[in-house]
Structures are given as C-alpha cells and as structure tokens.
Image 1: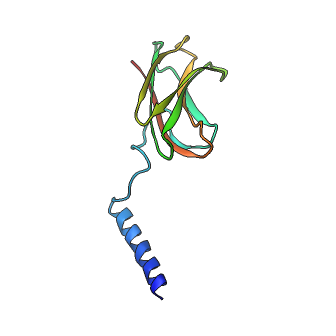
Image 2 (image 1 turned 180 degrees about the vertical axis):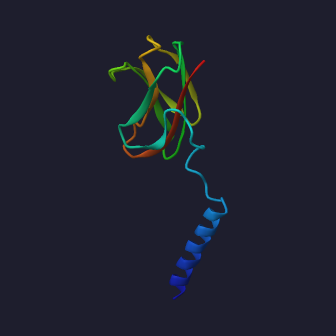
Length: 122
C-alpha cells in the first residue's frame, strides 16, 4: 500500500510540475530553420544557402549527447566538410556554390537525439 501511495504521489508531483512550467525543456525553443526534431542515428537536416553569400554558419542546441556534427553537402548529398559542434557553438564556414550547396546538422551517435539546428549568412 505504501508503494502504491508513493507512486501516485510521484505521478501527481510530476503532473503538477509540468502544468506549472517547471519541467526542464528538451533544448532551446523551436523555430529554427533546419530542424527542431529528434534525429535518429545517422540522420540530419540540411538547407540551401539563404541568399547570395558563400559565407555560411551552422549553430545547434541539442540534448542526450555532448556534440552534434555540422556538415556541408553538395546538392546531390555528398559531403565536402564537417566538424563537431558542442552545445550552442557556431561553425563559420564557406560553401563553393551559394545557390546549391547545403549546410546542416547530423546525428553521428548510435542513439536518437533531439536537435535544434539553424544556418545563417555571416
């Protein structure tokens, strides 16, 4: 009986905390331009240059692991550059063709992770 009462109390406390906004968010607020979602192992999101410049930056926040991989790809999907990003780090890089090359984030880990990813010109 005591165990059942303890489980009910924990469940009730969790529900009250979530309703009050006390629960910890999974990462920063969504609304980023490349993805705000759970990435399966070996998956990611990329986007074509925003406008007119070969100077691109990739920034990401995430949970579960210490890093996410920032990548550069050709329009066909082949990679031509990457680096590891720690939480909220930014990779300042360049692409060869501003109208078709892409930059983004990739989950290089063996488990799923929640990722917010964005790119912008600098």
